[in-house]
Amino acid sequence: MSILDKVWHVYVGDSWIGTLAPTGADDSWYYADFTEGDAWGNFAPWFREALAAFQAEDAEALEKVYSQLWLMGLVISAEDGESYTNPTVYIDGANAWFSV
Image 1 (spheres, rainbow, N blue to C red):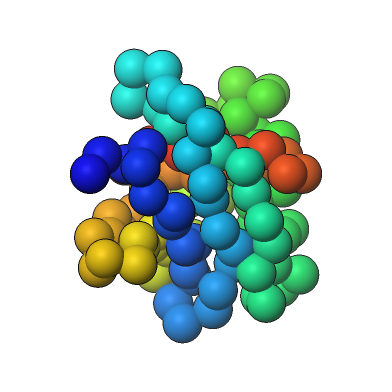
Image 2: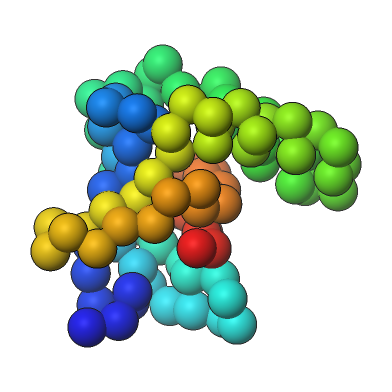
């Protein structure tokens, strides 16, 4: 199965941020529908900051946000056990895109 054939759960440490249901891909980026998880409210500001830095093309701010998320243990995992540490995940409402 490919990344597109699985539902991915986003975690920061043990906190469930949400679920990514892939809808397509472009080069190394995967597009997905995002559904909020139990801990979304606690981590939403981090992902909003990452999205704003990406949209502003502010590489320094983007690196700062992701270095913190990665230190906190950002991971995506599928129910079959496949997982990726330190992914890049952008979330904009119910839409997301990610790279592993």
